Length: 471
Image (cartoon, rainbow, N blue to C red; front, top):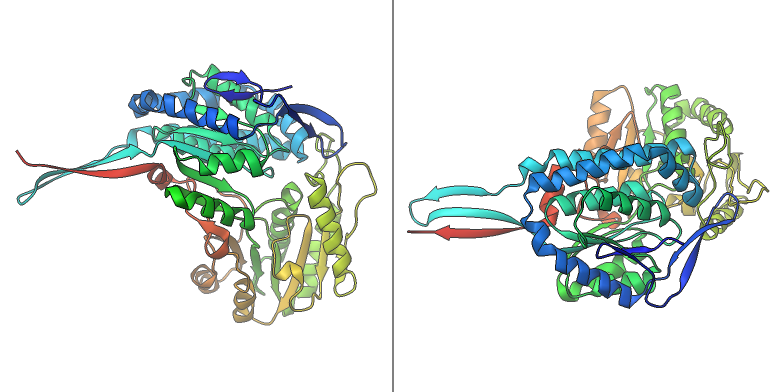
């Protein structure tokens, strides 16, 4: 059994209870972690409070060096960490390896920003010297989802710690193992006890206690919309800073002048990466009618080439869904669509052990069909014909989500129109899905508030204080 990291010590839950972690490809239990609750949340926050004064006084350059040393250790352990991530999350080894390396890259990126943490000074005749300080917020909480547990942990840990805050991190109950292993690497890199605490347990007890704790100054939550709304409500009485990334129903628009081969490849990759369990995955495609037949044929062909299986298998391009709830949800959606849409390929479970579902492409959906209204967090791709860009943009903007969107075209005018009119926090042109740590990440409308990544993410982990000096 792995243990929680609280105050630099590895500990069991106060209740003494544990919860198992299951491999989604085999249904075998691969480990267990403490079943933490409110008392453990309190202990972790207390440890973070105790470490705050010392860590915030460490020069930013040295804080950056700790992140860089941790990144180096992660790179040394990529193979072991990636295999563990496959076992608990289900994604193919190649994707898991990219994610672990991406975590190291994020820490390296923030380490490189360590010299940019400074305030401003200005002189005025009327008021004297004005000094604007940037101070850490204090104890921060990061709540991480199961779909991209390592990379999203990096988005939260990197800027929080570099800015001088301490953090309590809660990984998802189905994917805590790799995060705990990375916690050990932070300890080995010389991170002082209590600066990063990792606690495990269910959101309704452990997560709730963290979000409502009066000593917590910021909550960064990534997850589904309903839970995000609850987090906002629970954090409001103590006026906590919030970053909420709440998923999306990302549209892709394929124009009649697009490179259809490239667009089809990008859409298939953008939909079925991580078994479609990505908030910025392509979740709806609007294609011009004049090229729709050719585009659908290319998408079908490329989708049917995807090898589905255990993520550790050679040549596997898509693993299982991470959990039973997601698996049952995909079956229900496919069943509901079977009487009202046309399936180009897929649409069923594979019939093997594990939460495997075939990559699915559907077309001729009726207006108001669920995949056109809600986020489908799995390998089902709807393709919708439109007459022109006006109709495509209208359809793309028709949901309450606004995380990402893409437009595929060779026309600069159309690309500019898409970037201007698509309601999304991220817009790609002739690409989709990936985002580097340099680019701010977040959505609009129901997809959340705030941004992660980018140099200005440090502003979201600091508070400005104005000092006026007149001698």
